[in-house]
Every structure is written in C-alpha cells, then in structure tokens.
Image (cartoon, rainbow, N blue to C red):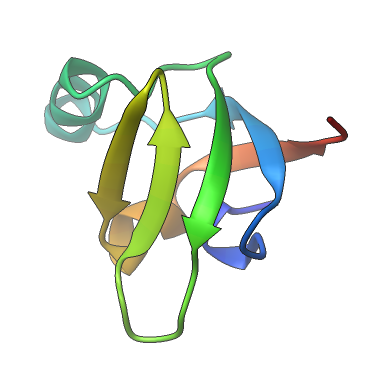
Length: 75
C-alpha cells in the first residue's frame, strides 16, 4: 500500500522508499527510513500528509507519498 492511501490515526511500517537517490537522501535525512514505524496524523486530499515518526512530526507532499510503500500495523 502507498503512504498516501493510509487513513488518519493508523500505524504502519515503511517497506520501500523507492529508487531515486536524491529523494532517498532527502527523506532519510529527516528520519523516514525503511523499517521505521510511524503514525499517520492527518491525510486530507490535496494537503500534505502529516506523519509522526521517531518523535518528529513530518509534513510530506502527496507526490512523495505515492512512491513510499508501507504496511499497516496494529497497535
């Protein structure tokens, strides 16, 4: 499933961040890495996706979220 498809208040784990080296460098520097667990705080259409990961709230643009593969986890 894509990160952009997850609903608010759900938890998940990052499976794959894609293959673009520039994107990988940028996204991993802010704390989102493969295997990281997170919570989707807000996911409104046409707005950035708010994700809580490693004690940090991240706002990710929707285009980037389309390329991030995740799995939903039960807490």
